[in-house]
Length: 231
Image (cartoon, rainbow, N blue to C red; front, side):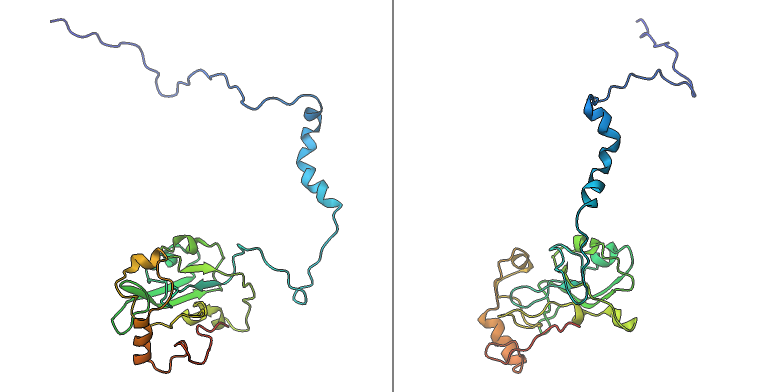
């Protein structure tokens, strides 16, 4: 049986460079007036703004509204029945490039159910001396618990006051919400909460809060007070 033929073509050694291929630009070349004005076309934005009137904002006497997606102070959101969205997973702290977030998670119990599921954020701190407002923590949050508001006035007289605690970051209680802790909506799991199927507290939840905390201001008919106080 004849042996198979071998490829004896010499291979390039190290240091050999292949012949350069011909490069063809996909951008059509400029001609005529476009070719003449191309060097100064980049100054179009500058020239268009040179003749616009200068606007000076008289802050703080005149406050101009920020853009809707402005990165301001953080906020820990709640579900429609009042339970907290934060599950203490610490993903926001891991994603923070400035190491400005500190989270300690804890287990929910039948008597202290702060969020749907098994865990909640027992300790939540944001150090605004370090925060660079990059919003990477917002992208990392799996339950949309952490968002950013339009509040930008965060200066203070002390360094300690710029370390915001959980009670400083929790969203205010909306109408109809019951302050946590209280049980989840009966016959639901955290999945129904994530899908937005929970639209408010039930009679069972209201009865539980009335039994364990009869003086809770968020009970129906109680005096209205703002929960989750902000600075």
